[in-house]
Amino acid sequence: MKRTLTCIVCPLGCTLEVELDKGNVISVSGNTCVRGKEYAVTECISPMRTVTSTVKCDDGRLVAVKTSRPIPKEKMFDCVKIINNSLAHLPIGIGDVIIKDVYGSDIVATQERN
Amino acid sequence: MTDLVIIGGGPAGMSAAVAAYERGVRDILILERDDNLGGILRQCIHNGFGLHKFGEELTGPEYAYRYEKKVRELGIPFKLNTMVLDITPEKRITATNPEDGIFTIEAKAIILAMGCRERAKGALNIAGTRPAGIFSAGTAQKLVNMKGYMPGKNVVILGSGDIGLIMARRMTLEGAKVAAVCELMPYSGGLARNIEQCLNDFNIPLKLSHTVTQIHGKERLTGVTIAKVDENRRPIAETREYIPCDTLLLSCGLIPENELTKCTDATLSQITGGAAVDQNRETSVDGIFACGNVLHVHDLVDYVSDEAEIAGKSAADYIDGKRNKTLNIPITTDGKIRYTVPQRITEAKELTVYFRVADVYRDVKINVYDGEKLVFSKKKQKVAPGEMEAVKLKSEIFAYAKSLKFVLEEA
Image (cartoon, rainbow over all chains, first blue to last red; front, top):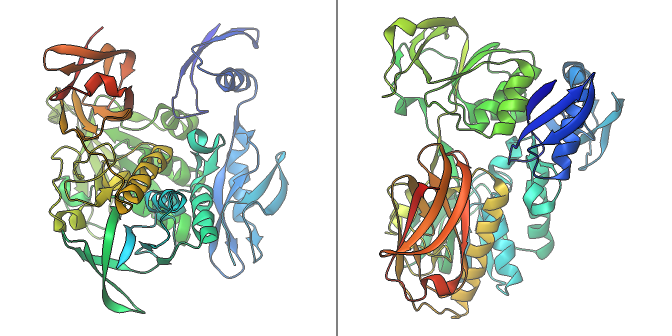
């Protein structure tokens, strides 16, 4: 089986051709870099995404957050739900963990809030 | 007298300030109208910035913070909440803020880094009523990411610019239903990766060659009529379709914000909407430079930073009297290539020429002519309006040229 993907690793957006046999990746072509090949393999086996959102701080303002590493694609909505039910405590520095262990990732701040 | 005044504290302004400082300028002032440095990156909370510049994937606020931190560490002065009202060709700046009132500054050099704004509803001439619920994609982004308000629940997006695509994903993740993204052109204006991760991931249809022909609703938007367009971009009546929605987001292009540039009498490019500049990003007015989205709209902030560094270093050299303008070579284009930046060459040193094409073309050659003579050629599998291209030209190519013409030809 063949699958055509658009690489999302960088702005180049390479078109990737992946050859699959019973769910195993046989070959990847069309990639410009190593990361593209890694993306193609992961995307065909267990697609992962970085999620970005905002968390409410205890003073009412928002602070921007992201998953510290990509999480399973099908968990994106659940992840945002967990984020929306949380409260962040001031002061917050960039990289501070706001929520621990969400689908194998931490939710970390990408903004300062003092 | 201030050596260097930079108008705008976004990615372009901060990067230019740091570059000028590192080249030896100490008397710098950044004027920023918002209440914080960082510009529009502050509301771009998604990731994907900085791969080219830092080799890692950052969010907008993280990218901005890298530069803000440098500006603060170097002690480069900046004034926030400060609106510049006028700049004369003699480089006298009039500005205002709540602390200083109205004040003027004389500058040896000025860098224009005011960025761009979105094409607004009024410019699109959509028929129908004028209810609440119509936002530019960037306004919706500010409401969701900075204020914590959702502008609506059922959304249609007109235009497939990157901000529109990013907001399709953002609002979907926050519980809204995005019915469709309509794009007037037969191709998207956004990056391929954004179509994949913002639309395809959520099964949001991208309707190419489609536009919104009518807005419905009295108090609040109740729906839009969309239609397919023919090759002349005219709606085809039989293809009309009604989509109920409470929100319409517009992502129909960005316009460099050049009201202040006009005050300086600098020559503007009719195509970019920004100043016409040389390889140093100097405008037609001595000592006034421009960089970032105020000069021409970029796809990637990384390239904005690169361009701002050129402007910052060049402004430093100008202040020091270290300049060597020996040439005056205009760069023209064939129309398939819409524009180049820079638009003229004034120094005999290697430079990168950035350009944008008018349509999607495959298997082409980017040819550069000095009169009839072909002096540079580069093959390209595909070029598209949404992706800025660049070529490096060595000085021996143009040292004796009268003019250069960029032409797109079949490979």
